Length: 186
Image (cartoon, rainbow, N blue to C red; front, side, top):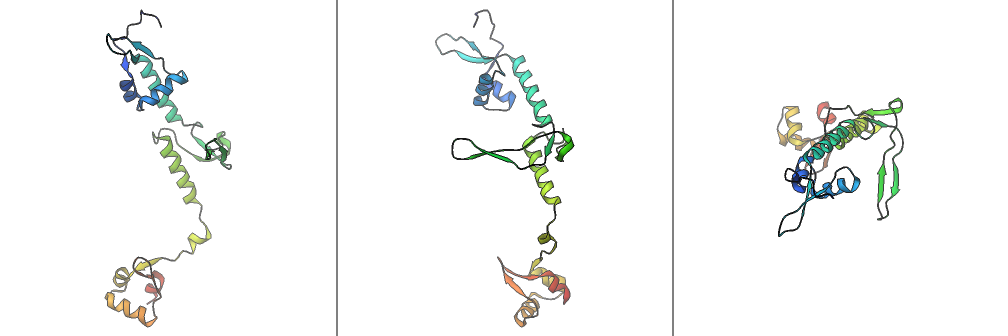
């Protein structure tokens, strides 16, 4: 490195990390990847300090913000089975197949959510929730005794007597529950 570089206005590693919203380790990774140039500020009597030009940090912040808005696939998730590859430590690595918009499953709208992981999770939840299965259509709704009493307009003791007489079918969950359909049929 040349001695003619003025590092007085440069940012320290901690300051650059704060601006980029990452850790100091993230700054080191950016330097290793070539995204950020590291300079050294000489300090008499102490070790040299790693510093970064504010313009370079701002440019990297802008680049990362644009990448977050755009998303890993230009904002589109596509059909296909996820690919699981071994990563050498005994665990798998999950990779989603990404392609163009013509085979899209669920679009993640650009600019709706600044966090791409949250946007992905919301898209997955929306896709799962949109698919109704036979079990969700025939699911039995269970209610507790106080709610059953409120529906009937009677006391909780009355509901318990109906359970004991066999008129209402009850099961024990955390509390005693009855089928809502049975209560409405009374």
